[in-house]
Image (cartoon, rainbow, N blue to C red; front, side, top):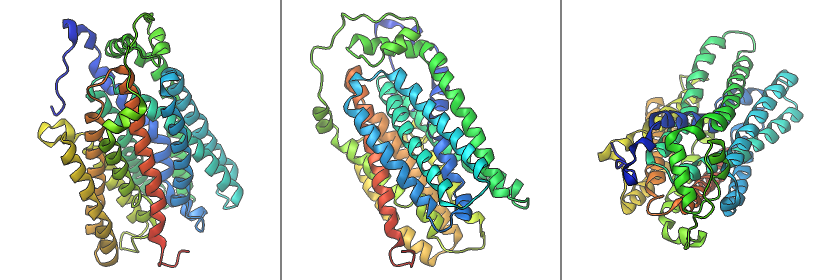
Length: 416
């Protein structure tokens, strides 16, 4: 395996019981963390039919990201004072309510292209951004002081949400393509599935995850090192925290930023590049080809599937990049995708664009997991929790910047 095998101090391997269940649970919680948003992103062909003049792929992403970035900035700054259990349950609850709200808007509007339903959709997508910051930052901070396999599994679950929605989109398009109002039926099915999964995530995190032996062990260890964020989760697992255990010397956020600046910059640059191309460019700027309406769906599906594959390849030791210099070189090399996509869209055929999109997804997933599992090492529980939150802040900052840069593709093509 690519990650170093974890050894428990004091010779207590029984504390790691439930590791496999924890890995599966982290994957499922990762799936729920982005499923609602990926469902919205995957049914963009429906939005382009209903709201053709509003650039829905770009606008909805631009609404989502400032809400996510602003919320995670506040939460990351105050992470040591925020109860992780309440934070994550709140996030999944917002996901559930907002996804249900989108479903109700779709049913009430009956496919209307009026501006009212579109504004309502934007407000609910903004709530998705808030939920993302609550859940993703909280989970990454929590898992950062556990074993790397749990972080890897959580991020694989994030990518699986995109792959799952893409596969479902292909199936629903094939099933409803010839039926009346087929795009709308597919969109409603997506939102119904997402609503059910978000509801399930609330209960899985609240009642099952905290009771896994491996989770209880690492949270107790973090509490003994001075962490206050795990108190409610330990109580839910039936463990009384020892208030006498304190950490005498704790790193400040400034120190963490200075010592890990390359990890933060690297994660930022990964997502600046990815979101400057995906999904807006792939929906609007790849021209017209023989695949017709299937073209953008196939491109999104290939990106999502290869992104998922890339998040598992770091488990292969020879493929896991741990060198800080090597990671930065690989991340900077990805900016060659910009001219590659430009010339491929202008001169090449569908096969080259599908291959290029697949490479974009694979490198995004692989490098994300490499950075996220390499960074939180050498610190005690409270610092690792803070570091996990700062890494998510960098990731969401990169996504927001990439979404803004994505609009530059429209310059000169008559869309303004």
